Length: 270
Image 1 (cartoon, rainbow, N blue to C red):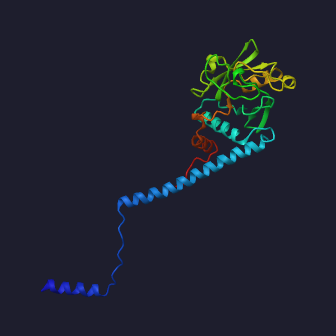
Image 2: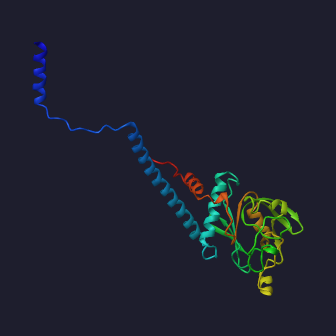
Image 3: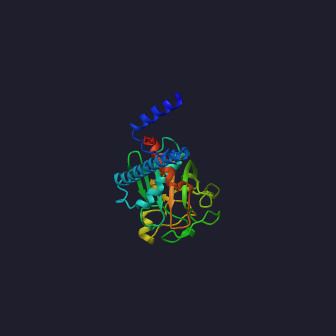
């Protein structure tokens, strides 16, 4: 009797209550998937923002230093700068060094195809002639080698080493950083040095520069200043027409991350 009475009361109360709409209950897997999608979207946006900031950084440096007017292509400068940031990321260059040297061997030897840039002050410190190897080509550099005795230039990234006095006077050792492309530079004694055949006078007489045994030789009148400026762990990038050239230091993603970190934009808000 009591059970019947309670049941009647319960049914009566339910008759005055509107039925609640049914709601789907999210499973743990669905919650995780949704959260991952949100995080992925935000991370993707942050990555795009970092890349845009890096691109702006490259453009600003290129414009401020007047590199277009001085004949350095944007594409070559961008590659060199990507390498610079990767060397900085790996702590392979001196922390205080903001010097980046670029050689573009796609240009005629009669042109000033070496640029030494102070990235901190956004200025070109030197823009001068530079010779290529005897067997690399006549006026233009067309062939490259990492082999000893090839008398050819080698492409890629170098870290400048110490100076010494040799048969060319003050010279600067170079450490080739790209395996298979310039990694034998020390063994081959590939160095920066001054040369009488790397001058405007030589160009006027012969229509091109003289050639080295593979060294990036510069005019003797500026060689001492050039060497003193770039010595002791700064970055040198030698660009050429070899389509097969690759380098771990051309990792754009890692360069962007390093720039974001040093620029203070490496924190992703979630």
